[in-house]
Image (cartoon, rainbow, N blue to C red):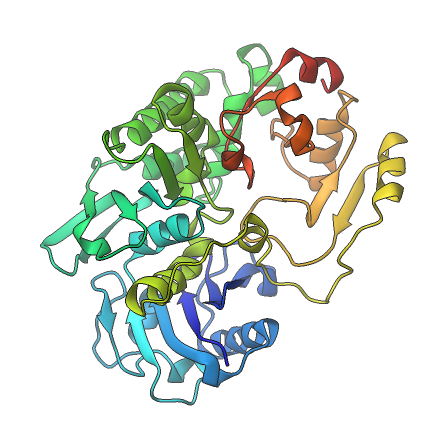
Length: 422
């Protein structure tokens, strides 16, 4: 019999996870409902998610030793009236029954928002010790277990393995009234009238000035404002480093998807390696909550999760063949065809990492426009290069290979890449 923790996040980008026995199983609610950024769907929807994820994990209720919750829906399911933003709190059986679990002896925990981000980043990383940063779009108010009330936007700390008491090693700081993540949200709202378009705004960083109007359709006056915001983000990441701490950084929160700022920490500020997991936004919070409870609260030894385990822990239905027909795909690509690939378990998070991907030949300059047309997205949106690890240094200036596992960091292309794949 295994030892598993079941966890929920019930805000926008809602998700549920089961972690234990060296495994991570993760369902983002939008993958079920087909509603982007879908949030709390009511008790019946959440019970359905629990049924699905337990079946996907192949475990019974008897193997669940704890439940971790994040988001106001979790607070509504307890008799205390406490919110998930205020405390790390044990509530006996407070979260289990509303989610269809019949056992009343399951311990339940609220996990502070940024602690969930930080735990997801660190516990999935290959680092024995690292600086840990959580940065996202909104400041949260909560009581640190042994401290005063703090209002935080970004958290930075030094996590050691084995942990000992993580609470003695963490500091949370309020960055600014504007919050750097909030500024990206404001930009998304102003440019695209969409609070979830921060990634589209960040994608504009790749558009050269001479093609700005052609590719974006926006007035050129937007560009210097965007460059200033990116510079502010770079400085925000830099300001959170603690010199004298380990030169490795594990980072989560939605702003962690800004690969330019992550790259800058390695290129300019002495960080040896960055680790940004594949779902650093709120869509991965349940994974962090489950990992924190399993390893820190329950004291289970830390597990070295493989990048494949971390990346391909997402929901899959129906079951798909494990191996795609590689030779056939290569032949189709060489003929200029665009190939959609789907196999194995789905990715966690927003990046297409090879199990749910659209592939095309990069030697044709028109390929990017064709892919964007197929996906129905703006022409300025970037596509990612995929290259054999053995030849990566031939084409790209990779600062540390571990930082490029999940399409969360950029790299400069070498001249050979520009010639072969314009």
